[in-house]
Amino acid sequence: MTSYVLTFSCLDRPGIVAKVTSLIAQHSGNITSAQQFNDPATGRFFMRVVFDMANVETFSASLSSIAQELSFDWRMRDVAKRKRVLILVSKFDHCLLDLLYRVRIGELRMDVVSVVSNHSRESLKLSNLHGATFHHLPITRSTKLDQELQLRNLIEETGADFVILARYMQILSDSMAQWLEGRCINIHHSFLPGFKGARPYHQAHERGVKMIGATAHFVTGDLDEGPIIAQNVEPITHRDTPAMLIAKGRAIEQRVLASAVGALIEDRVFLNGRRTVVFD
Ligand SMILES: Nc1nc2c(c(=O)[nH]1)N[C@@H](CN(C=O)c1ccc(C(=O)N[C@@H](CCC(=O)O)C(=O)O)cc1)CN2
Image (cartoon, rainbow, N blue to C red; front, side, top):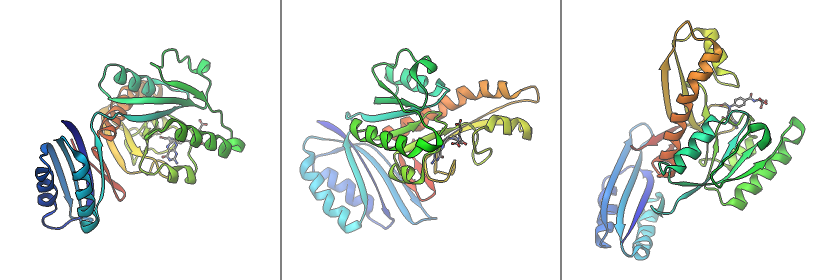
């Protein structure tokens, strides 16, 4: 018996759940988890179903015809098939190392196919990458498009399902962001929409806020504007200098990114226009 996760979304109407769950039962499947959301704002319906089934081929064929009838966009995969992830990092490696540690202890069940940086491995003092290959792709304003072409080739060669910007401090071009639509996420070191840009902790200190946070979001051509997947905050005080905010922020960034990556690789995240649906 194999465990599968099926995710789909479509325009909402009566009978969708009944059709899909009956089809699973007709093919001797056993549903072990089911979550759904009807968005009154967009009229869209979202569902994630995990089920055990011996022979999925005939089920998949029948589901295709229902999908055509209900014009829904669906994906299904064997739960045991691990997602392949490429991680981009610049100078600060705390989010990268946290993800690699969570993979090593089995918390994040994914394969890190490559770690890519615009800085050299020596300058990053990156010792143990737990088996992931490292690629140094330097970038300047004049070499940006060439560098992005190298990055595209690497993403294709490694068969990465997702790209994670784990404090990668270069802005991806519109064409690169478009090519990676729905499969590239970034950890921004502020509670968006506040303090976009490269130096959010200094902006936060300047503004005198009493909470700082971090935001994991899909990457789009609009800087720090992509659909949000996860956020978290922590209180700070007038005693916190920008350097102390940067230090306090590391742990927030790490847990917010890990939460978003976990949801992504378990197919619990749906794009819903400028927003997301994230099932527990
Ligand atoms: N197309 C996108 N690319 C990136 C996004 C995004 O949302 N869309 N997020 C950034 C990450 N980021 C904040 O989270 C960020 C990174 C870099 C900058 C910035 O101004 N960079 C300067 C250069 C800075 C440097 O060299 O240190 C620049 O590129 O001119 C702002 C925000 C990752 N990419």
